[in-house]
Length: 113
Length: 117
Image (cartoon, rainbow over all chains, first blue to last red; front, side):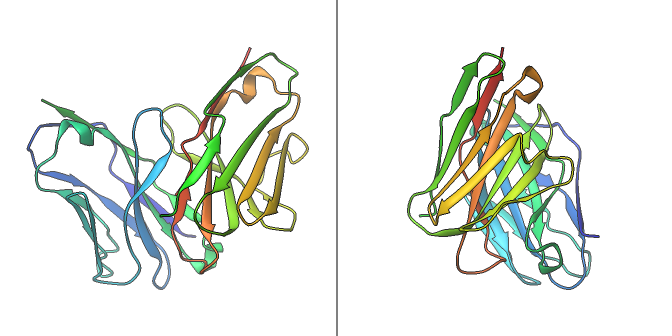
């Protein structure tokens, strides 16, 4: 079945460091891929998405590229800020799962000043 | 765009009380809404999928008589936790998907923190 695996956290970085949060998926065909962010005590916000191979989603300085050959959708940011501290979820949707979101376990990101 | 409003944000009530949580899509029509439950430091657990005008589809292990879902319009779905008990305490989050297509992203409310004493 479809699944998403993302790196375990917490990930702790200093401000202005480079961020990578790995996400790989298992699915047939071409699922849509998403990154969601959850700030403390809040719901989830869509951060970025990609719907086909080689698409690059970007928002607020974050980027992720849909890599079919490696079944990956790694999240990157060149210079993180303290305000980026949150939990990041990678997810996919696929017609085989009636487009329900299949979630990764979430990665907690802690940015220290 | 794509704003989802969820109310209330926090509820504290006594055991045995029924609690209703509302989920509204403010600037788009949502044929499908989803209800999730999130335990501390864990990912989201899908409870049910709600389609406007039809009965909700519950995930395995979720009691439909305990968690009543109504999706009466394209902009409103409600979750009622009936006769709530302390084990029902959790963070409940709704999301809504536009009517445009199944592979569109879900947009989430801010969640409801339910605490049963």
